[in-house]
Image 1 (cartoon, helix red, strand yellow):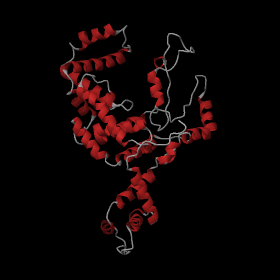
Image 2: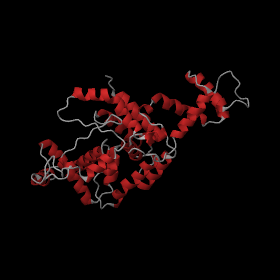
Image 3: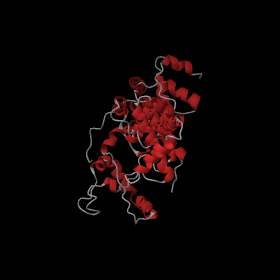
Image 4: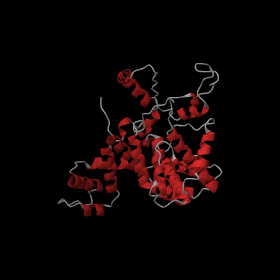
Length: 364
């Protein structure tokens, strides 16, 4: 069985990010949104700077609540004590009688900045969906504005909307640093590094009818869970019972891959409108087409300046794609026909444009 390394997944995430970054108007729109939100033109340098900026938007009581949340999480982890109604008095006593009297204000502030920053850079939860105080006007504007930015540039050709949402958001608030940190933490997590593959295991918090018990007619998914799973209408669910073995699951996928693949791709024919398929994230194709696209944007005069060969390519009947093909052969030892150059440039230009949602939904 083939095993995929962290480097393999990093390349995939980098390609998806490059495809997003080359969407027409993304960089300019990002700067406009940053200006609207009062962010630096290129985003913050790191999560600590972002945390300090956001804390500057908080009222004193909101800062106090943040400090308390940081303490609760830390105290709960250190003492293996869940924060619930039964233990709430223990947390209050420890916070007010031990932590606050014995901790310097600057240490409390540094602890809050550090913990808050880590939450903001998390690879599972969107930073604009952090449980900010709802009464704060600035925080209440973050998610709607960011979501509008994400939706403007996400398309089916960018595949997983969750990944794209994180990449766009991290780029918006933290620039290249945010994207790099997201990809780094994403590929370090074996649950999260696989593009297009994940798992879901419901617990009692996902269910209604808990008073009636399992296997009763009322023990069904609650509205929040239905909404969560409905986002994956274009997916195939693999249901694994507790008594199945690892070997059986692997064999099941191996034996039934043809039908699984058919269900994944052919049941949702709207993906075909954009030529989306599992092998679409290819580093070689993307980089080659991007290079050709960049060369094709140059004028014939500029291309002739770059070409150092002996052929006379300045004649009127010689077009740009012929010069580009000669440059590619000369500089990269890549043999590509002028016709292939023309198609590659057009293909990349197509991927850079913002795409609308599909019209053909059929079997969904």
